[in-house]
Length: 322
Image (cartoon, rainbow, N blue to C red; front, side, top):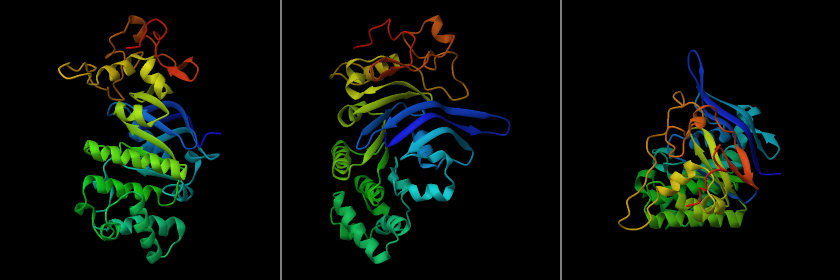
């Protein structure tokens, strides 16, 4: 049994007179001690998928389907039961630590609060443990940083605080939502190395959300490519790069810089709004391989080879390999 098993997950927003789905029929699983990647442009539904797992969707949002975590369907849990899991067995490293941390509380107290809430520790013991956690995430001078506020720390330090909070209760699953955004390359490497060491030392599974295919290539075992609320391709990471099956994935790969002096080849256009999707395939209005049949009916997400899924009617007609 996988640690996390998501089936037919649909997420949307309600208005006065109708519902607008923004994520449709997602199916994926994460094994124990696995780093699973979720890739796509901004606005594809990656973060809202993560929020649905934690049960912290906005008030006007809804989630349908099943999210099985250790034999428990998280969608069916009442708020109190979900609070016992959130931050304890499943935790999240948010995209921007400066807006995720409380500006009027010391970082030490914010880490200790997790331990006091979920482990029932006294404040003194929790603060001592917070020092140990900051040391574990390679925070320089943790005893000093413990007493500082978020604005007194650099971006890399704030991200280390978020990671310390996320692993404080030794969760089974950590959701890392673009954990290296706005960090310089050196700090990015340190943060990713830190996540790897936590997985190895604590047997933690990680859902790594990013738009950086370089990070995916070096850090994940499997990856799902997401576009406009749908999975377009899913496979082991090596197959995504060496045997691409979907034109959207191919477009993302071709957008990467190849060598100095060679211009980039970006995908034309933008991700459509959830209420303005094109007919047929959701990628049809930006796809360079589109044919009339693509605009008639949305393709199924099918297994084109062992463990390799794609949502394209032309997968077998065109060699996507670059």
